[in-house]
Length: 616
Image (tube, rainbow, N blue to C red; front, side, top):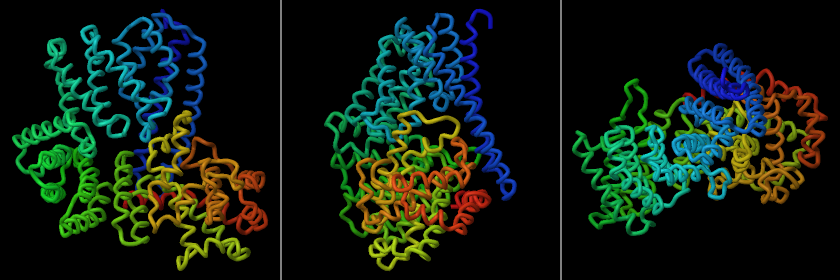
C-alpha cells in the first residue's frame, strides 16, 4: 500500500485475520447448538475441531510475527496513525482480539504517550483494559497485568477533556468510571469507599461546564452516568463495612432510584433487583425497619418476580432477568444471617431449594455464558451448608456446576470413565492398593467414590471458565498462572464441608507429581495424603485424556494412546505412580479397553454429554 511500509500493512492485515478467526470460532460453537441428531452433531463437532486446529496454528503464526516485528520496528508517525486506525476500527472485538494485539499496543502506547496524544491514548488504554478483562475473573491485587491500571490511566485524562475532539475518546472516560466503580469493585479490586470516591468524581465531571457544553445531550455518555449510579448500588453486599460518607450516599441514592423507578413501573416486581435490594437494606441502615421486615419485603418481591419472568423481544432472557436470577437468591441467603424469625428463614430456604431445581436450572438450560456458569456455581457453593447430606450436595455440584461447562464436563466424564476402568482392573489383581482409602470411606462404595472424585476433580475451573475455554491461541503467562490456581479454587469452594472433604485432596493434588517434587500447587504435600492412591490414579487419567483428546483440546495436538503409554513409563516413579503404570504395561486387555475409550468412543461420549448438558 503506497505511503506505508509493507510490514505495517501486513501487521494490520494480521490483526484483521485474527479477528475474523475469532468470529469463525463463535460460529462453529453456535453450529453445535443447532445440530440435533447424533451423526449431524458429531460431524459438526469434528468440523469444529479441524477448523479450530487450523485457526490455532494460523493465530500462533500471527502472534509470533507480531511479537517479532514489534521488537524490531521504530514507528514513524504515518505507521503509528495507520496501525492505530486499523486497530480501533475493530474495537468492538477488542475484548477477544486484544491479547494478540498486545505487541502492537506496546508500540503504540509509548509512542502516543511520548507525543502526548490523549485522544489516541484514551482509546488505546480502553483497548488494553478490555483485552485483560476476560482473563481476570479472579484477578489478584498483586498480578502484574492489572486492568485497574488502565482504567485509572483513562480517568487521569479527564483534565484533557476539552482537547478530546473524538466523542468516543471522551466516552472512554465514563466507561472507565463505570468499570472502576462497578466491575472492579464487584471483583474486590476496589473497596466500597474507593468506588464511592470515584463515583462522586464522575458526577462532578459530568456536571462540569466543559462536559455539559460538549456532551450534555450525548445519550451514550448520559447512559453510562446513569448506569454507573444505579449499578453502584450493588455495593449493598459490603456497605455495612464502609465509611459513613459512602453509607450516607448509598442510602440517599437507593431512595432516589427507588422512587424514580416507582414512577415508571406498573407492578412492584418490575423494579430492578439492584435498586430493590439497596432500598430495603438502606431502610435498615436508617432504622426505618428491621432485618426481618426487610427480608419479608424482598422475599415477596422475589416470589412475585419469579412468577412473571421477563423476556427479550426474541423470546430469550434479558440481561436484567439473568442478573435477577443470579443475584437475588444470593442476596436472600446473605440476609438470612440477620434473620431472627426462624419460620421465615425456613420458608425462604425451602422456596430457594425448590426454585433451584424447577426454575433456575431450566431457565439457564443449554450452554450458558461464562457469567451464568459462574453465577450458578456461586449459588451452588453458597447453598451447600443448607443441604441435607452428601448425596444432595453432590447432585447440586453436578447439575449447577459440572454440567454447565461442556468442555470441562466432557473431560471430567472421560477421566471418570478411565479411572473406573483402571480401578476395576486393579481391584481384580492388586486390591491392597485401595485399602487405605477403603478405611476412610466407611460404607461408601469404592468405585462410586473413585468416579465422583474424578468427576469433581476440576470443579475449581468454574472460577476461570473463560480462560479454560480459550481455544484459538496460546495462553499468556498470567493466564497460565490463573489456570494453575484451579486446584486451590476447587478445594476452597467446598469450604471444608464435612460431607465433601473426602474429595478435597483429589481436587487439590491431581496436578502434583507422584514423588511430591513437582507440579502444582507447590505447598500441597500429596505424599502424605490418605487419599494419595486416588490422587495418583486421577492424575494419570487426567493426563491420558488430555493428551489423546483431538476433539475438545484441538489446540494441543492429540497424541496416540501408545505415545502416552510411553510417556507414563518414562515418568514412572517421579511424575506417575509406578504401581498403576506397571499394571497398565502388563495388562494388554486393559490397554485395549482404554484405547477404545479415548479413541472411537470419545465422540459418542461427547454427544451423550452434550445432550445431558443442554437438557440439565
